[in-house]
Image 1 (cartoon, helix red, strand yellow):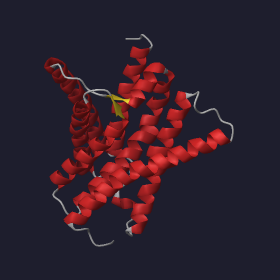
Image 2: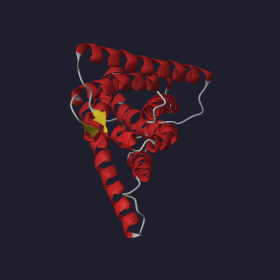
Image 3: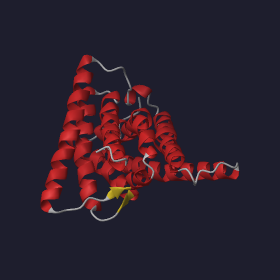
Length: 242
């Protein structure tokens, strides 16, 4: 295994991984969709298809590919950010994490409402409200692509890199700040800082779950379940089910 990075190298690498992945992902998505349009696929008229492609290409292809490149470039093995079958201890952590995230979401939403604040809206939700079937696409993708992809990047690589030279608590906090910050690119409307603040708090739970178990599968499942519940509620709301 290569020598651990210094604190300044760890922080710089973590920042580069965070924003570099978003920029690279944007390029991959744009090029791929452009090629499909050239080939005659009517991507523009199908928001659900476009959302499916964007999600798979960003969180799946780009984040996954970047992880492989990063690990190989540093001479690290796949055990640096391991995906393993959950043990009973991991399953318990997943259950606690899901309850914690949903509880925090309810608590923060209540506080925001009582204070008369507004939270910005993710562009994905905007697309889904206009095309509710998009939420149905996102529910399985939350478990298959979004959770695993984002957790591999932010907990496995970013938090793992920071963990090489920083105290675990500092690594979790800084990785959570970086995770929350990239959501700024997908927000619209007022209350962007409120949304970022909520994302930061929720990311702390994911970071703690990974630090506790050392298994990326745990935060990936927590993240996936949290998103899936939100998309299910959003679908029911948009279609009059709630």
